[in-house]
Amino acid sequence: MEIKSEQEFKDIINSDYALIDFFAIWCGPCKMMGPVLENVASNRDSIKIAKVDVDKFESLARTYGVMSIPTLILFKNGQAVATKVGFTAEPLLNEWIDSNR
Image 1 (cartoon, one colour):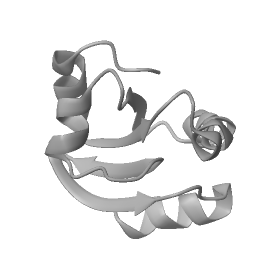
Image 2 (spheres, rainbow, N blue to C red):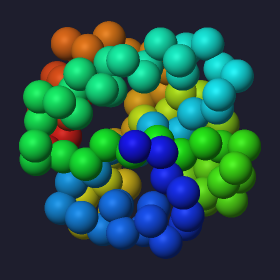
Image 3 (cartoon, one colour):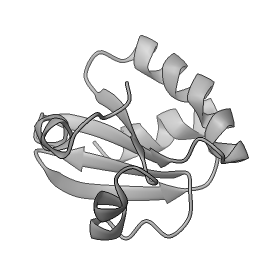
Image 4 (cartoon, rainbow, N blue to C red):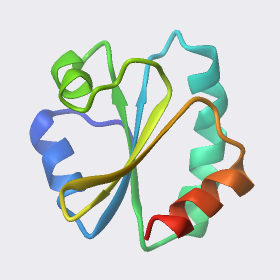
């Protein structure tokens, strides 16, 4: 799901557990992350997964120190708890999510 507003972003990260993918439509590795995130989302009910287009929401990217994309940030109750930069294969992504619960 792509974020449409800063308020929607705040609502999602303030849920129990959320994974935000900071991406751009022109970014090759970001395009490769799409299907991986869709698979993870379909196999996990306990985490909300959303995408933030850094070209549309530059202020959010700046706030969270996004310098390269894709950047994945895990949030717990509104607080960033872990960050991963670059393409990540599904098994490694699942391990990362589990290790940062």
